[in-house]
Structure formats: C-alpha cells, structure tokens
Length: 277
Image (cartoon, rainbow, N blue to C red; front, side, top):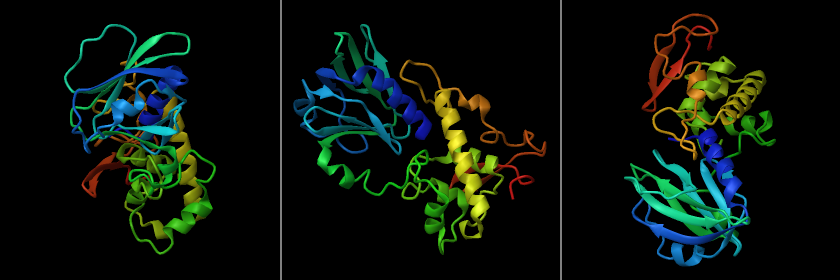
C-alpha cells in the first residue's frame, strides 16, 4: 500500500498542474471501487476550478472553487498518471479527469487501480472533519504537533507493541509497514517492544527517525516496493536505500549482524535483533 511518502509524491506532482486549473471533462470507466463512486461526481466537478492539493495521512485532497474537496485514496495498488498527450486507456484505468491549466495547457489525470481498494469522493469542505475516512486520523508525523508530549499521552496504559503503535492511523497518520520497520531500525528500538516501556529518550529517537526517514523518502520519490509509480511513470527509488525492509538474512549496515523477519499482526516485520533493543 502506498504510504505517506508515496502519497506526498503524488500530491506534489499534482500541485504542478491542478492549481487554478479547470475541469473540462470526466470519464468514469468503473465506479465500484472499495466504495462506489457517487453518481453526482461528474456533474458536480465538471467546469470547476481546482486548487492546490494537500495530503492528510494517506489521502490526497484537492479543494475546488465551489467549496468542495476531491478526495483520492490510492488504496493497496492505486496509481495516478499525469498525461499531456493522446492516451490509449490501459487495463484498470477507472477514472480520467481532463483539465486545462491557467496557461491553457491540457492534461489528463488518470486513476488506475488493479485491486480496486482505493476510492474517489467529492464532498463539501465543511464536512472535512467528519468525513468517514478522515475524522479519526491521528497527528501528521511531519508537523510540529508530533511531539514527545503527544506520544506520552497516547502510550499511557497501552501495552501494544511499538510497531503496531506506529502503524495505528488513529495515532499517527500515514505510516505503514515499510516505514515502520525503517523508523524503528534507525531509532534502535525492537518492533516487539511494548510502548509503555518507552521513556522520553526513546520517544525522541522515534520522532527524529520518523521525520528523517519520511523526508528522505519524499525527496527521492517514494519507494518502488511492489508497484508504486510516480505520476510521471517513474518508479520511486527509496527502496534502494532501505536498511532492513525486505533484507532477511542480510547483514545489518550498522552492526553487521543478520537481519531477521517475523510476523506482527500478519505483517512481515524486518529488524536487527542485535542493535534494536
């Protein structure tokens, strides 16, 4: 599943063409995604002006000129393609939005999703805090309110392991399996460790590692694990810099001991049992 860096990469690419662009045409080739696309999407979005998109957790949000929000969720396998020339539809292309920029350039934004676990929605901006996909999201890990004090409140009397804690979208928005493994390796914390055993210094390490890993991944375009594509068609390449994920029985770059893999909540979890304590 695309995680925060992949979604941010897409959001940044979209911001280069959507801001102050007009929607000229919409084609829906398949509406039955994880949830059915609303019948009024085409009617309500056509001829509207799009504004600068932003990200919330793993969701792309594009405001419109009529005080609505276009939400794009990539799900497990969704990708966004930005096309500036004639295009022949590919298998699993479900939605195509044709836009005209303020300098009269034309682009097509195409949502492709083989597994159809994603979603596209359009709703009034006044309902953003109560949208069923957004209302329970936790803090943004790249924002200033991701602090030791915040984490201390969230771990109070909790016994869950720190890996599951990091991946809980109601606590921290946007972190998935890949980056949780990488963050804990950099912070030198065992993924099985109970969160109520973490002290202030551990939490500082987690925050520092989280910001470092996520920013670094965004800078290089996300990870190419499985099938993530950037909108320009290039694979993200943070995978080349992963320290533990997918490296079972390879040497840890830090201590040279072998990396292990275990299952935590049915997710493959990679870590170094020697330097992560």
